[in-house]
Length: 495
Ligand code: BES
Ligand code: ZN
Ligand code: ZN
Image (cartoon, rainbow, N blue to C red; front, top):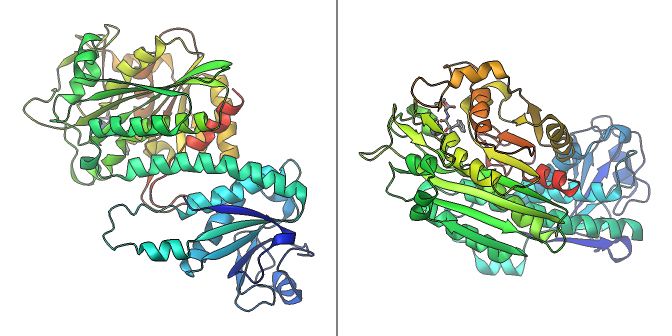
């Protein structure tokens, strides 16, 4: 990740290539660094007026080589997500201009209830999240000399000691969190043939080494057989790549509570014998986003020393059609002895999560959260930018609030008892699909609920929409987003 430095006004660089100045409607720039009378005048021009989402580029100011004025609108109406987005687009603009030394001058005012730390964190997040690019498969050689001689560098310029202190704390935290988001985005953007289950296990090992107080268990096929994980083994049967079951454990010295995080790790979802047709198979490399999410959250939590024990559980399989595939009308038996009749091999996520949820339940944690790109129906109901949440109402309320704080929208769906009949099977305990076209996200949630043992609260995140975007949106480039890593960290900080 690129570096974001913090400097105080006294040690500000003279004439930086670009100074980014945030400005508020009807408010003078005043003593803001790099502001001169012409910049001040420009901030109030009729065409700009420092309105929200407007920017004004000034190529020849006095105190910097260039100034980019970024309008934030009325100070009382500013929220953190607007600030993140403004910061993202300013950072992208700087990169487009091929500039290397960019100074972001922190705003000199903030709305009630928004701390200077929150503000600096949002600006740093905006820079990092917005500038992410997946370049691993671009053949154009990067000139290493170019990179080291003059790397892209961002500085947050603070106007007083209090702000400097706040910014240092904020940026240190944002760096750890954005690094986890980058990790998730890299894993999800990776082509499917380059990340079969075994490779995902080696990524988990690298993550273990990067974090603090982390340990890793990787269960292979024979161990899964001994544990009767018929869901994971069933889905894996069609692929030449064997499944792996990853259990990453973060154990701080003084843990107040324990949490299990379960993630769907389908490294490619072709649909299996119920094969996906046409464009439906496109982007199905993203079907391990849930698993990547739980690994990312756990890495960040460990690097932030959160006083909370975390079990990240991620079954990895590839869902492929072949002569050895599991079939429709087959019956699979899960780790807890429950059985499911397969009506569609493309509803495979719930099958691997069933075993993983039983495994997680038996760890007897205070909470279980699961993450999965589970249903196309979630995209139909909530679109690409809202995560569907199901399960414990109180926890959902807190998660939703954390989501609002982080600019990751989430919305609850019910798990009504009357829809449970939709997954009744004639020959097994349940079947793996409901009625076609009827509440597909909810029936998937009801299926998962069957495998949550014990009385601890549980919340299921269906991230089929927000995990992977067809087009850029806010702080997310197109492709993998790393949603909802940031919100869950925010939630865990006060859990
Ligand atoms: N991985 C897909 C869900 C998905 C769809 C993720 C779009 C991301 C974007 C899942 O395994 C799936 O295929 N679900 C089926 C279930 C159906 C057969 C009951 C679906 O949603 O169509
Ligand atoms: Zn599927
Ligand atoms: Zn899937």
